[in-house]
Length: 312
Image (cartoon, rainbow, N blue to C red; front, side):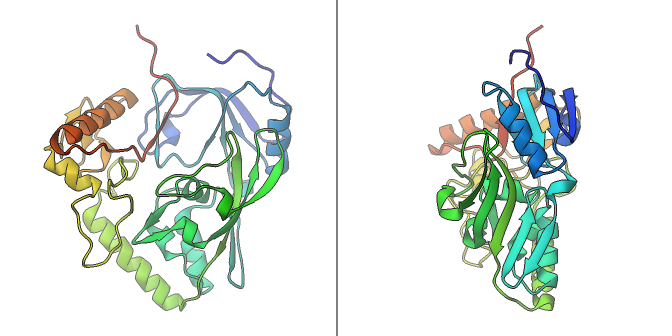
């Protein structure tokens, strides 16, 4: 347990023992010791500067790629809101707040004749897209990202170029405890009609193959191949996570209220009443079975944070 600590004065909202289950797409998880919604970047910076160094900090996006364990999260969970969701476009530059939804950024960029179409089908917000180097159809956030603005754990504001972020397939190496507040993209040009047509095609492809109406957190495991689907006709499936899960006989596998989705085997799903332990336990069972079947070790793409529920 994190020791009791005094909370700095803020202009935003501080809540103790905030249940997090309703803020994740999988609808599971225990409480955060403290939940902070800063009013703006200055409020966030002042809070982190005054917060005791020993207190852990976890930046939380919209919960689209997250399992919060049933015991909750010790320390402070920071969630950015309205003060961080602006989108500005000038020339080739697209500037987006970390809380701006990926889909909104893609649409607004397309209206201005700027191509960030790959973001349209990615669930979540820009801060998460940077942290996970999100991508699809052969395009990645790192391809168009120029820099990010962050508040470091000590409250210092800093601008980091893409080269300093350690972006790789579904991963990054951002400074520990930092919070992304804004990302700046160099977006290629395109005709708005063409860009919107492309996004509609991508949405149709996604809806045809993925369980978009079910309670999931997106892809559960990274592809063993080390890259996302290219969207090309010659794209092979041999080292796609869904294929090795299916080959191991784990499509449709269940544990409690958790299931590996029948429509897409790499989508861990809360089919009703699942706990975080059900979901994570099923995921680990899938990893074990895939290794036994193919010798491949699946890496989690979904972030799992917090502590398990205390034993009764």
